[in-house]
Length: 206
Image (cartoon, rainbow, N blue to C red; front, side, top):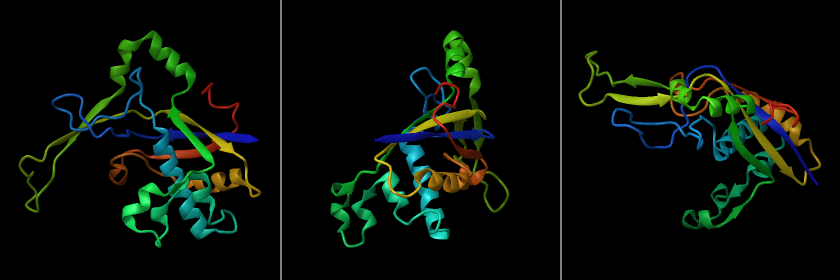
């Protein structure tokens, strides 16, 4: 028996989910893109955000989100167990019961971009910043440029294998609103987001 839901990510400003690589000489960090060139969140990133939110909620309100919820959804590395030697932790893992798909733009937007691929590059912006010394002057050789994606809406499918005897959906509904930012620079104002849980028939054909 399987079940599932959709997660809606409403990005409220510029954001950057990085690849760790630049794309041009003047850009130090570029966002991850689909084969069509569109911005998206990889499923592993979605899983990490959800796990962090579940962990926080279970510690604050265990009557709503049980302590095992983060591991049940997202899996457990033996590094989560202090009794396991660190060198062996990556070989001893336990998969979660939820599969987190990539968070992508709604189907209509993807169709629009397929009809006008020349417009895709205009979605992105390059932001530049430099480190400032105590003197108030810019430090030498610290100028960095980051390519960011615009505010938009992304939808991610969550598939649940063998639902538990507690309310997995309630656990998500209580937890994901705690996700307030995502991607690189979220502690500096980038990636403000509102996340919510929806039925599978929503999401604009995701």
